[in-house]
Length: 611
Image (cartoon, rainbow, N blue to C red; front, top):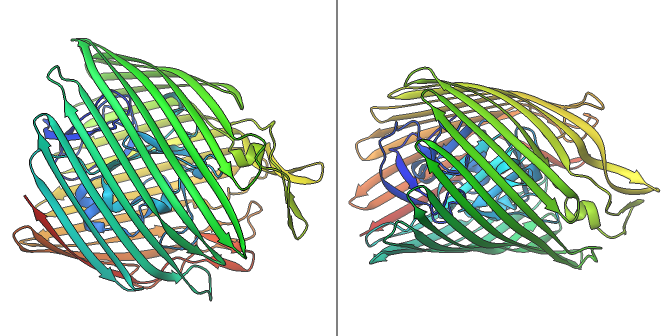
């Protein structure tokens, strides 16, 4: 449980689950090392009360690190592997506790972003500059979030409409001919708060393969949020985020658009019952050009969710229903272009003095692969104000993608053809976890051990001489995660260590592209008007193939940063990434060629905040 090391602020949610218009409220009377989170359960709880392994990346972390890509915030965090086909907007996968990219749900203010064709989120196109806070929940959450929450859930909270009139503008430049500019404003009128912000950045980029040419990236994004507070304690909120641009890859380029739209209303019906409804739509659109040909893969996800929270003393019961529809349009002639999922769910949260208990159940009925029922049970015991122990069990599943199920027969040449398999079943998992934590006035630590058993693992196979997706493999993933942090006298320190054994039970081999060991150390010091800091991220070796013959060496990188408040409301920030210019790879393009990450990268930015 790595948690925020900044001053804690409570979170007010429009209704117990989806924090579409989560607002940062006044100071909460909780430990600054045990902040309130909303992603781990269907409602606000401190990290300790959530009975889950949670990492919080707060606004101060995000601004000081100024990551080039959103996934850079996740790299090296407990239980997280980030795999990229190069840097600066290139294809990126996030593995949570060894579960591949499609097994991590990505939410933006409660709106799910994912590609129904490729599976998982397009992390590389999401702008970190418009994010105020990130919560990373590790472990199964299908009983709360449905399909794909097998490894965990990552939720990004965008810039919040704050009370009062305020705004900011920032500009920066760096090597590889990189530039960016961003601005935002927020205000209020009566009981209504709003915020608008925008971003443009571009770079010539670097080579993404050995001995390759530079591959650039261009991104423009905008965000708008409106929140209205009703006199009865209810709330209505609207959020719209759009990110679009172009990313070059080896031999071609992709025009992309990400869009998230959400509308939610919550109202208390009496002192013990509140109800809320949310409507959302997200789009993941990609048009790629390569070798004179064009390919289009567009996904639209629409969702409606109704949730009711019943409170009795310190206990809560949540009951709800959800309707979701995926639609695909493409230059490929998919056999099916839409699927609908209906779900009912519940969660019971109980507290008996030092004992906390949670029980969650969910049933999903999908027209493509039928009924999936999942559940979770967690128990926690608080020895005193500083020490807790927790244990949990949960089931989860990962849905097959449209590519897995419905991709039309295609002969790609070179003796390779592929076709989807409509008889494919979802991957299913059972998960066990035990954790213990200590939380003190200036520092914390958390240790978790877990085991995940996966059945019907989706893998490559052949049917009637044609390559396709098949359910053949079983996997067992065991791991341990240790996180710790310290904040006192201007020092901020965070440490994350992960050991994982991701094993293919059919072959005894290590699952491809997962590393067994990761470590991350962040250290920052504030001195007068200056802040200095650095990060070391280390990852062990991994294999790019299931047979474990193509080994990718481990590596360590050093990042440095400095900030200077040189005048009232003015700030300058310098970030240096991969200072030692380490060449490393997390994936291969072919048996003879690796994808490579960017070398030494620098960015100098100046920001002005006005009120």
